[in-house]
Image 1 (cartoon, rainbow, N blue to C red):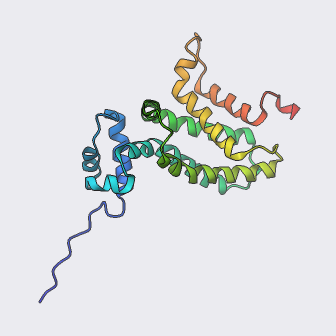
Image 2 (cartoon, rainbow, N blue to C red):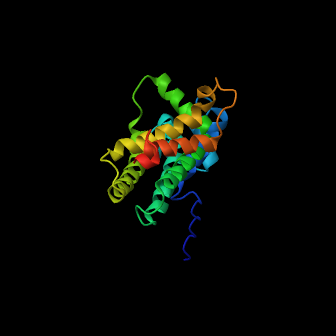
Image 3 (tube, rainbow, N blue to C red):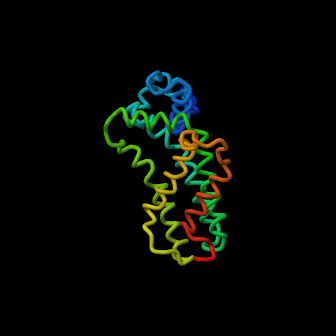
Length: 213
């Protein structure tokens, strides 16, 4: 008796979480949070709707994680590239400039999704989901560890790296999302390059000129 041929595995097998995040990010960006259903997300991802709840628990948690996923992916890639370079060698302003440029680009490219996340969190009148913290924590901790190495190698002051990495991300996020509002009183708003340069200089030198440090 010949064996019954096995049904070919679905291309989504083992990749359901990533497929759902990509589909969710696309649909939430185009349609908004309220107009997007978990069934639509599952269909776009090519998986069952049950997979949404298996991986994320709820539509709200899927949305929150999808919104911060580009930031996490960028931070992981930047940390990997950074870890391959000798610590404390590259010009610190150049390092900070590349960091801010990358973060600014990611936040700007996902501006609608990040804005929607802030709106949903504000409307919910609750603390951010534990899912967001759990998703962000590994990338932020890795980045904090690398910054601590640079801190020791370069002789920076004894700052709290866990706080600083979040301040850096918050500064880039605020400029990417709210620049139009912040510079609405200016007839000649600054260029993106000028904003990134000032963020880098502020981070490395504070208000003092480089020679003072």
